[in-house]
Amino acid sequence: MSLVVNHNLMAGNIANSLNSHYGRLATSTERLSTGLRINSSADDAAGLAIRELMRSDIATMQQGVRNANDAISLIQTADGALGVIDEKLIRMKELAEQAATGTYDSTQRLMIESEYQQMASEITRIANATDFNGIHLLNGNLSSDTHNGKDLTATGKMKIHFGTANDSAEDYYYIQIGSATASSFGVGNEAASDAKAYTVSTQEAAQRALVGLTDAIVSKDKIRAHIGAMQNRLENTITNLTTQAENLQAAESRISDVDVATEMTNFVRNQILTQSAVAMLSQANSLPQMAMQLIG
Image 1 (cartoon, rainbow, N blue to C red):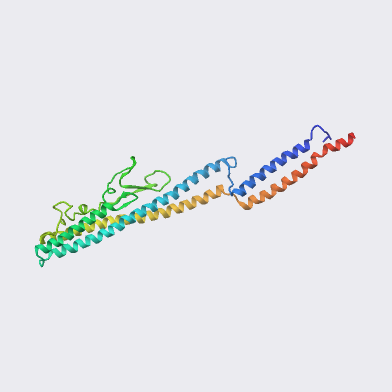
Image 2: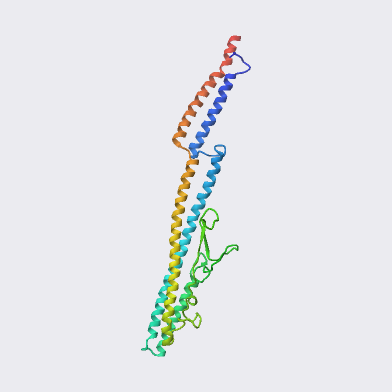
């Protein structure tokens, strides 16, 4: 290579190497400071696309777990109210048994009837008052076989959504809770007049009410059994969603996160190369001065 003053090709080559080393050093610094291997699409365009899809699925699954937990809370609210209704039905059957015997006269039986009807009214009040986040649970609003979610307020059975898409086989299912009012159970004077458990005002009516109250208790137990099974299903769904989210998080980490040990090795290597290039550039920049010495 000739000794010239117009062009310092050696310095230019070293400067190019310095820029390359410094760029890789900057990349290593960014990765080590963020903990991410992919910080922009330039790092790995395909990996970035896969990572963002995974991140969206992870966030969606985590919200799905919260949705399922909210549904469990809703079911527990309904089940607690049904437990209280259970006590009222048992008391009503006790009163019917009392009124069915012949040792009470009509006046005393009417006193029993008064409490009997109060218990029935309380069952209806509990059913109408039991709600979760403003959603009434036991008044029959959730007993429909159809669901309509197109309006601001959904109607019919409740859709519990927990999946990442909208596939009926994978991403949601419904909670359906039957009506638990006194009229739906056929007890008390709010029921149809021909209902078996309509009244206990006479001995004959009280004997008939015993059968009607047994049917009412069975109906109530079917509701509790159904929502209990739904709670167990939701708990299994939560377990599955949590496992999926954890595995997807691990996969996303393998794509996105930096291997600190490997990257630290690259950082030290690039740091040394950068320092070496800076030293050599300083030497190369002094070469034109050697030409000047020849002129002098």
